[in-house]
Image 1 (cartoon, rainbow, N blue to C red):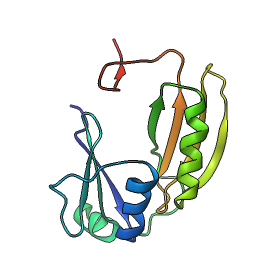
Image 2: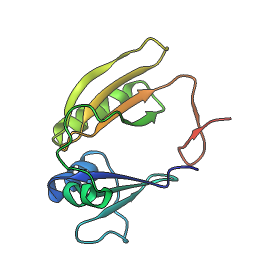
Image 3: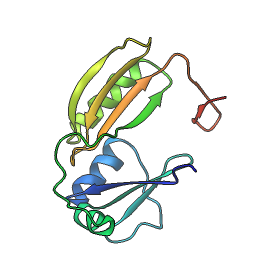
Image 4: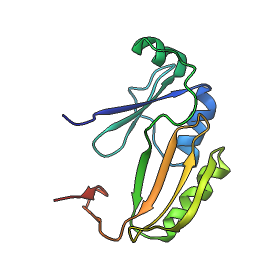
Length: 139
């Protein structure tokens, strides 16, 4: 098994699209429709879908509060990119949860929440290498 689609529930589509497209540089796929947006991410697909409908589909309450137990992460090739991406996220409505800083495992990272509270880590890992397509190349 491997994840093919990661779906984030949104409360306001226009706000979420602006954040992900203008703020973080994602490009909406043509398969996107009125209430769902798809973004290719180099293997998996990131999707935005109404939070209420996503919860209904899973047959759970949409009231979720507190830490959900999941974060998304993006890795960058240069240490300086961590602060750059955090700055863009904040400019487009994200909330910085942890500023860019050196971390115990030897890298550099920070966290932000998107406008709907989904947590993202931005990390520079000196032990990761990238392939020609910009994907993390693991053994």
